[in-house]
Image (cartoon, rainbow, N blue to C red; front, side, top):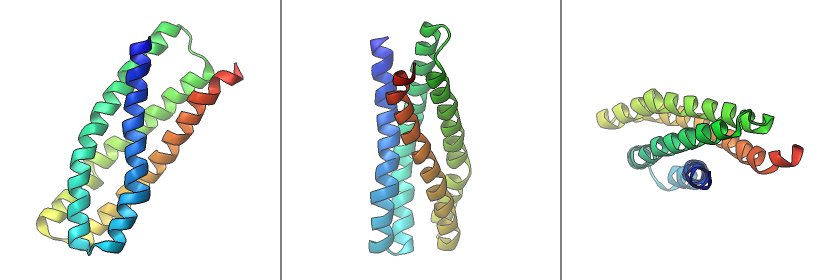
Length: 148
């Protein structure tokens, strides 16, 4: 159980921490400092590295979470709520990866900066939603045992 918990915490730390950094530090600074061609090229490159780590994080979180839930038998409500929110976050990430992120990559490759900006705006909104869900899930996981 302790190894599963470690992998779970590692996974959500990388994912939620990365979203916090990208959403609240990297993108706003890049928007002020860089013109669209440089900004969109930078963000497409950053996401290519970060999204690879998110896939690893998703696997760690899902695998360790399901393992720990299986050990619990009937998990408490707060654990079930974390599971549901985690699945929603994973589905949102999959949508980001397979739709607007792909549009961003195509736009950057074709130097279509307006289309890239539109794709980036969608990514920003969805990452913002996922960041809020991730922080709420951390609160539930931390304070949920107090409600038993």
